[in-house]
Length: 171
Image 1: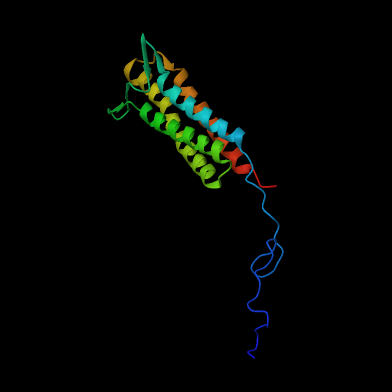
Image 2: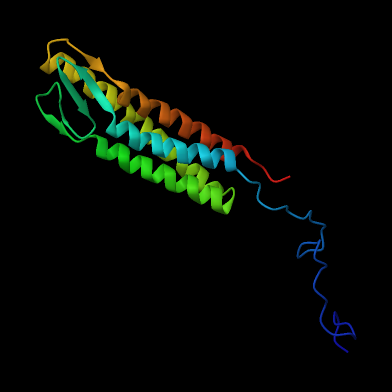
């Protein structure tokens, strides 16, 4: 008879509540829902898109939104910077929708946080573009309008939503 072999054949697999080495393992619960964070991401995405359509600059009889041209201090022209806001808004909305449908997924939450952080810098572009238009084109008349600030608020909501998604734990 060979050593190490039992007369009953190969060893039976470990019970379901044990790992491959026979140590007890606690059962993992289902993924927790992160619906609040998901809704916050979707709202933030919609607000970001809306912010691109709302006025960024008002004054001197002129109103400009994210799809107009804005001067830069170097003498260049930013053409339709609101397109970036729309792209970020669509990504945030999509990430929120995926989170809402599939519950909490860590990779989606991390991606949402990264996109929201990038969106923070692009949202500040709206206020900067409006100030440049005021200072460089209209001699100090007018200033940043609603759309520029809606973009910043939407990104703050997106960051809060991403953090809420990431903070949910299995119980």
